[in-house]
Length: 426
Image (cartoon, rainbow, N blue to C red; front, side, top):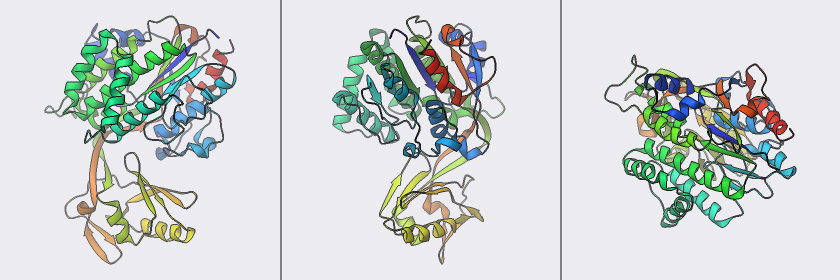
């Protein structure tokens, strides 16, 4: 098998906004300028409800070719709900060499991948290679502790090993520059991680002579959610005292693109899966200050509390009776007569839920818990005011040869499955 294809996933990245930067700064980001000249299609999703326009729902649709209504994967780590095989599994069964780094909410069910580093927020079978597995564990700890930057000595060691085996001389300065900035800036830390992931992917892809590989970058989505209104393009809402991170995104991602779009030894797809739109007022995201104390006050007898990405959590119980009691209690929690919790799902004595209250909690706001009226701000911690929210449309760019397979219309995200399978049959 001589055919090679790389899928480069810039999660939720606003390509239209970046194109405006390139137009006002011509010649500065040459790889993006080259990307914007390639064959392109708008992409769409099957979703109609806002709470279904999430990357952990959209990307499984890309990989397994099924809409949410069929694959049923609603949250991170719920991939076990889907019975469908993903693209990599299908191709591997056809003796095509596959690899993957970071694909969101995609488990490792492969028999013998060239390499597999999972999404840092899910639990799945580790790569058979001890070094790759150890790098995965180290990166996962780093992502989950991005705020505090707490890493074990073992994690530091394996991250450095991954850096050294994949380091190219021309990338040393960028790593050093991003590393220094990362000490005090969590958004630059996210960009450093994406740059690290790319170098590791580029090394593993070439070393193993992989035929089909996917690589996932999330810093752009993370930064957009928090810093959309800092863009110089959005002057109406711009905070002139804040940094415009889009120039940072462009600088790092332009270097990443340079590894792929001028290389004629493989075909590629570059896409965002879904996009964000600007929210001028901002959407508030909260977490519980102390989940154990909060659920004790509610009278919820949970055997385990598992906090997940952002505002999501899972409560474990040892009986269906306790699940019913807990659901009733959770649905009673309100601030200003609005429900605090929502997006409930029950599976095997587990309650999956989210903090869906997304408005500003003020000093005078109360939470009624049983017979108590408590200060809301003493129980809930503001983790972010997001000024970028999800929309279901996206954009994809294609290498010239792969573009011959494309329809002349918008591509639904589930259609990529068959397009990729068809490419390897050509």
